[in-house]
Length: 40
Image 1 (tube, rainbow, N blue to C red):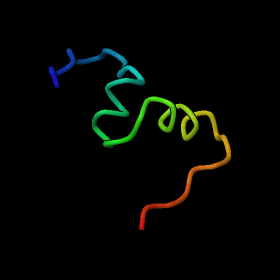
Image 2: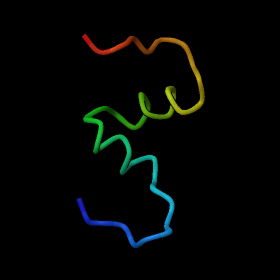
Image 3: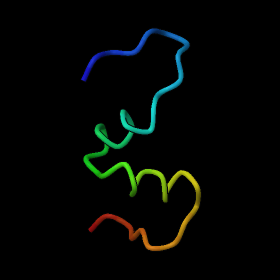
Image 4: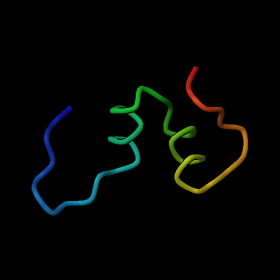
């Protein structure tokens, strides 16, 4: 994954990739949606 320049905002895709989850899961977490469990 390419490094972002200082001061730039991360994309949802970058956050999902870093967390090892899908874009949809990252979106649910960011937006406070249901259906996301805590890590095991």
